[in-house]
Length: 110
Image (cartoon, rainbow, N blue to C red):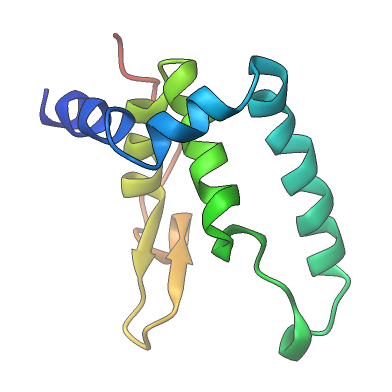
């Protein structure tokens, strides 16, 4: 599918190939607890000074590299395309903010 092709292109590109080569499997999977902790801190921080953990290019590359190393980037792309949208006021919406019939879809078969 086009989505699988796009995921393969992403996984074969820089900086994802470098991130996979630079990190062990444990480091790649370890990014998620680190991000959970960062989002926990962000949630307790006033909005005006709230950090955005995924604005860091290295964090984004490590997350995507983890998905590539597990063969899941196409699934994550599918989830994000279905779940997120740009709202009329320019903010990013999620789930029911994007479509009234939003619900979890089955994971695409490989």
